[in-house]
Image (cartoon, rainbow, N blue to C red; front, side):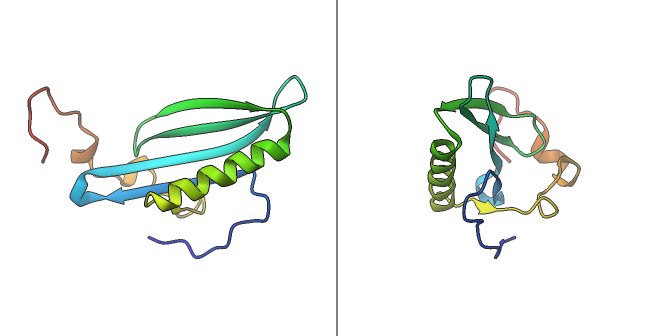
Length: 112
């Protein structure tokens, strides 16, 4: 599932996925720039396993330009790590993830 779309000159959001069934990896990563209440910008980073709510982190920046630079740097880093850019209509939804991959393993249980 590759995305051949070119990145915008100054993207303000991105969604990436890395799916490697042989390693039992079904991950997503989302980035967006949001204004904060103090005139700066926040880079919202969300990530997790497909089908889960995941985790969130806010990185505060002095202005939107600094946040856009950080967003571009993180996109490049994730692409080097094997993630692929996703368009909103290409992203796998939780309903499409096999149920066997979403079930939690009990402690000591081997991976499938």
